[in-house]
Length: 191
Image (cartoon, rainbow, N blue to C red):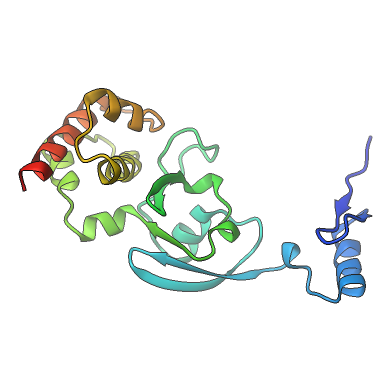
């Protein structure tokens, strides 16, 4: 059985364990071993600034949901396959369960709570079309749909289907999601 080696991020030297690697980094490079220690990051979430220390292995989902209390994003698969944890980062929908928080330093993030605070027409149309049953997947769908409408305010039905393809609904309300997004686009054009 091959033993795991830990590589120094500064010089590439290998150590047998993390403690050895930490000692090497401090003694040879005179610096705190940042990749192994908590690190302060700054995030702008729903137009509010946050600064907090995160562990290198924490996901963005853990930070926004467990540490900051934005509970709209849901943990369903924890594998990046269901879309229930989707948030918008720098204008793009991303899976927060697959994104390390430490990589998000300085980024702007929008959650379903931020969309709801703005009374976005998507919320009204989702309710009107009963585009949810249990509601667990709904935040991910709404966030993904908003990201689509932000970059393409007049999507075709095929474009809506493609954008929402990464979101899963156990209750099978897929047709209602498409109707809600299409009607939202129409309403936003009329306004």
